[in-house]
Length: 221
Image 1 (cartoon, one colour):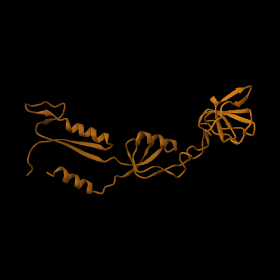
Image 2 (cartoon, helix red, strand yellow):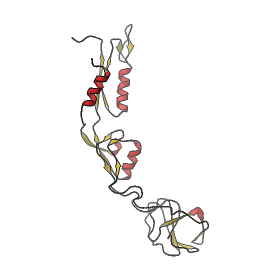
Image 3 (cartoon, rainbow, N blue to C red):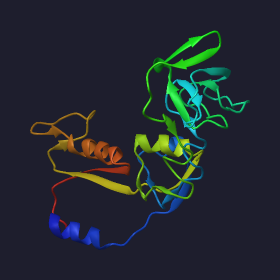
Image 4 (cartoon, one colour):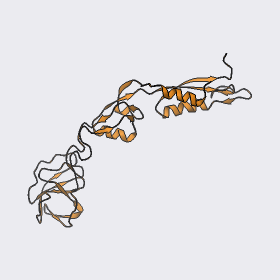
């Protein structure tokens, strides 16, 4: 029998690559992606509001602003912001043409369809198109897919991934004193816990276990 260190050395010396298959995104958790994945679209795909508030032009120093429309998340602006006007906008909504800044709603006062800035706003509160991810940027290097990666892929509209087939791992248990759960124990015997536990650990690592049962303590001639 080979000792542990020699067996490990032999295994690590084998340059084996599992076959690659395309699988639906929902089946890729724990699988190994075979190649780098690049972004298909910019994130965000458009400039969007980072806060609820009012979209205005950064250069507009008007005392008050006419509210010309309301832009919900998922909706598209229909009007262009010009001097003295603004659009009410929700977090995540697309910025309208003519606006490059969002005044947070808590910094404003609203009366009769007009908005007035009550407290100076220092930030722009806008996330620019492609600010988080640019098209063609590598978003995942070859490796194991974790739960958070699924969200990143879905954000890009990716529905399948090239993943390697899980390795097949043979598991045996050794010892004449062992019996598998469900079998009847003879005097001096115990149930085999290691075999099933190793199969479970192999599955938890993303591989496929194949259990070959118990090998008795008999010399091989």
